Image 1: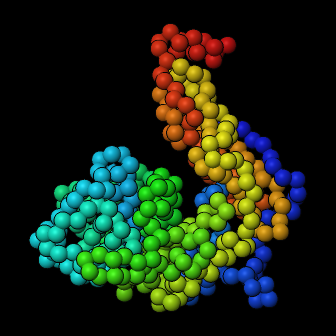
Image 2: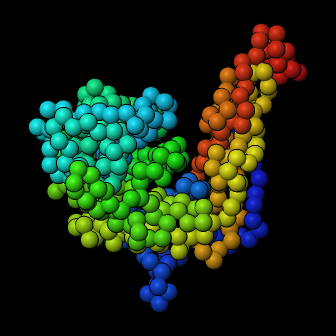
Image 3: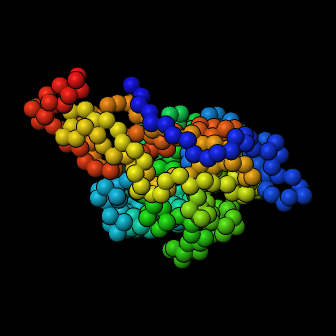
Amino acid sequence: MAAALVWLTGTSATPAVPPANPALNETGIAAPPSPADAPIALLVDLSSGQTLFSRDPDRRFVPASITKVMTVFVAFEMIDSGKIDPGQTVMMSTDAYKHWHAVGSTMFLKEHQRVTVDQLLHGITTVSANDGSVVLAEGLAGSTEKWVAMMNAAARRIGMKDSHYGRPNGWMDDGQTFVTAYDLVTLGAALIQRHPDLYRRYFGHKRLRFNGFEQVNHDPITGVVPGADGIKTGFTNQAGYGFLGSAERDGRRLIMVVAGSPTGRARNEAARSLMEWGFEAFGSQPLFPKGSVVGEAAVQDGDSRHVTLIAPQAISAAMPQGTHPQVKLSIRYEGPLRAPIRAGEPVAELVIEAAGMPTSHVPLTARDDVAQANLFYRLTNGIAGIL
C-alpha cells in the first residue's frame, strides 16, 4: 500500500516547459550535445532527482574504463564498513604483472611491488590504471573473479538494473561488461552520496606522480567547467568515447553521461556543453535543507507507531530559468513500515512533480531507531488500529 502526504509550493501556473532551443546563439548559453557527438546522453540534478536531459538512457553500451568507477565504489564500501584500511598494502602478483604491466592506462607497477590501497585508488581515479585495478581486486578479494562477483552484487544492491561486469578494469571482454546511462548515473550518485569524504579525497586530481612517472588526468571537465570534480572517461574501438561526470555549484550537484562519441574531442565538447547547459538553462528552488524533517510514516509492530522522515541531503526542485511552476510534493512508501527500523535507513521517498518536468523521486531516511515492540505493545497497537 502506498501512503501519501501531499502539499503544494509555488503560486504561478506558468508551465515549466524548457525552451525548444535554450541555447540561442545570441544568448551565449551552452547547448545540449548533438546526436552525432553524443548518441547517448543523460543529465540528472542530484538535488532533486530530476532528469534535465535524456537521449537513449536505457541503451546498453560497453563502458570501457568507466567500469573502474564500480571497482572504486566497492572499495569505498569496504573502507566505510571497516573491512579494509586505505593504508594497508597489497602486492603486484606475478600473474598480474604478466598480463597487465604497461597495458593501456597504467601506474607502471613492478612485479612483487607492495603498494597501499590509497595509492591504488589514486592511480585508478586519476590515471585510470588497468594494472592498479587488477592488483586492488586480487589484493582485497583474493582473485579478480571474486572481485567481479562483488561488483555485480553491488550493482544489484544500488539498483543498477541493466548492467553487468566481467572485469575490474573494463578491458575488452567479449561483451560481458555492459551498462546503460541510467545505471551509470545511479552508480555515480551512490558513489558521491554514500561516500562524500572518500569521493573528495580520490576524485578531481589533475595529475599523479608515482614510480618515477608523472601522468595527467584526461577528465574533460575538471578544471575546465566550474565546480567539476570528476568522474571517469572511457574508450575502446568497440565502444567509442564515453564519460561519467559530475559538478557542483552553490550546493547544487549535476551528474551526466555521454557515450558513443566518435572522437575524444567530440566526447569532451559534448560533456562540457551538456554540463554548462544544465546549470545555465535550469534554476533551482530549495525545498528542504539536509537533515530537516519532511514528514512521518506509520510503523507496524514497533515501539513507536510513527517514524520521522528526514532529508538525507539538501533537496531542491529544478525548473527552467525564468519559469515559476507550481510544485507538488508527496511522501510515498510501502506501509505501514515494519519494525525494526534503523536511523538513517531509506524507508520512503519524496515525489516531486512540476509542470513540464519529469516526476522525480528522492529517498527519505528514518531520523530515529524504531525497535520491534514486545508482544503486549503489539497487541495494544493492534487493538488501537482496529478502533
